[in-house]
Length: 316
Image (cartoon, rainbow, N blue to C red):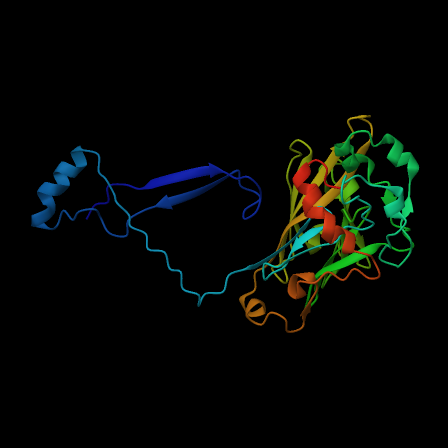
């Protein structure tokens, strides 16, 4: 018997999603049986002709759309934040939203009617308002309507077994910190340190003698434009998190920068936990409901989609 060869295709890896130590991912195709069998008299002539010419292989693929297989569950939180739970439902929480329903501009009068997560009146910062000449600069300067910040606003994303992921929100609710609790301890990633060096200085261990490099598998991409991708896997539970660190530079003053992160994906990979979703599991990803504390959120429900449609740069 004789095999006439194999074909292979390779593509550059966008990130370390599967194999962070490889520059390329390849898919090869080889035959378990030869295209033709020289031991079979009826095929010999065909084999000789095939070896002299380019052969063609046709593969027919049948898609199995059976619902019996359980897929991984994905949850996201990005922006201010706007989140999507495992079941596909969506929620948002814009902390101290002071936008006017007609103009979409932040106003002091509206700010003073809003409450933060602790039930405290939101605070107007006129110095920020004076600098906010360009709407897009809000990403670097922040909103002039701020939380009183007695304590940070935290949101539990996913809690199961010895694993927990939660995020802290800054002004407007932009994500500033990711905290990951594992069997080995508690580890935090801070958005405003993500662009330092190779990015590992953004990670901090607390209440643990196990360093973050040993407790979590972390892959950090190079900075591309104003973003840096970070991928984290808890080796014990197999839960995977993909993060985008974002840097915004003010048009008014290039020295002024603002930092945030998006949780592009928190993926539950364990089939047993997926099938029993809800049992001994908690957080927004499971419930689909953001716990906003004593914050006022009615205004955001009225103005957010309308203002976002006006100009994607005017997020708030």
